[in-house]
Image 1: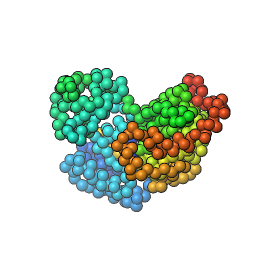
Image 2: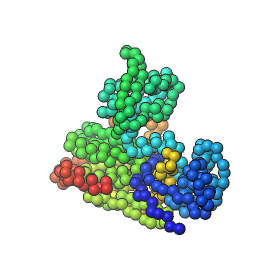
Image 3: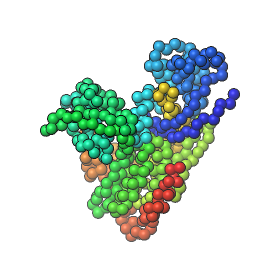
Image 4: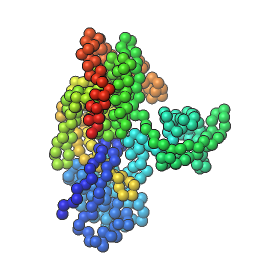
Amino acid sequence: MKHPSLPHLLQVALFGGAIATTTTLSFLSPVLSPAVNAALEDSPKALLDEAWQIVNREYVDTTFNRVDWQQVRQELLGREYTSREEAYTALRESLERLEDPYTRFLDPRQYRALTSQTSGELSGIGIRLRLDDNTQSLTVVEPIQNSPAMVAGVQAGDRILAIDGKPTQGMTVDEASELIRGEIGTRITLRIDRTGTGAFDLPLTRERIQLRTVNYALKREGNVQVGYIRLAEFSGHASEQMQQAIEELTKQGAEAFVLDLRGNPGGLLQASIDISRMWMEQGAIVRTVDRAGNSKETTANHTALTNLPLAVLVNGNSASSSEILTGALMDNQRATIVGSRTFGKALVQSVHALSDGSGLAVTIAHYYTPGGTDISHRGITPHVQIDLTDQQRQQLTSNPNLLATPSDPQYAGAVDSLRQSVLANRTLPSQNQQVSERSPETTMDANRRAYQ
């Protein structure tokens, strides 16, 4: 029996814990009788079969790690469940038999959190919270730029005593975040305690908040103007933020770029492709292979924003989409890679929303760098390998202000790797500014094509 066509896969994620939203349909196997189907509709078994069908249809390994996947279905549907949580546990146990940590079940809270993370936006008031180690109070780290919280005057260090009248004592950051988020346009009241002011109530209206995933600055390193860009993850807004960073730094007079992917766990596949195209005028970016052995190669499309010298910083926590971008720039001789060997994740996941608000991430493909390298469990070894000592790592962790300064050995190595190219470019200004001096209209149109 041929199933109706499935809805279009909207996005794909490559992320240690990453997700992308896709819309899917579930089909019950015809071997079940109508009476059994009806009984399943209002039970946790319906959700289990929905998830089982997705894995059966899409999982990259058609042997299912040598597991009898049909038998797994019989076992799942042959048990009785007293709650959805019990069914969730059974599903997780079944997925563990695939021995693939990236194919996993997400309960509704996890699914909401990860969709917000990869979309690069959320509905809330725009504050970052932490639990103070000494007082165990929920404390504002910072208000997000242009958010309702910033407009209302929320400050770093403010303590949140209550959320809509509910005391926060003993509340975790995740629990507080769940209460603070909500539908756009709805109201919320925070009771805030501020040093020197005392406690007061602050009413706020939730809005859609775009999260910053790209931070950048022009740095003068000796006689070289370096455009430094740090990309935290490949979220839904990473591409537009990266474009802004490249264009602004170019206008400010950057002679070379350092792209910092250290600690970047990955994210959306399309974001890694779009960003690769901003740095590469031509050449292959990545090749993916699905469960049927079908191979697809994605290439640059002559939409690069700059051809100035580039160094990329990576470490052992640079994974997945970070490795796609790094591999593309390395294999096309577009950048010098500096730092430590990367994580080594070469699998692609799609994530499906399930009918009860939970989600399912499923590995659907394997990817290879343009040179045909499989980086699984091996990662990418930088051109200039600089491994931090435990002392250096601790120093940078405890004082983040030292990142991207001469006290950061990997950043210093990246700058050193660029000096010779910068000096050579100074003798050929017209040639090397050709790409970056495109008119804004041309650049915008070209990148609009890249995003389609």
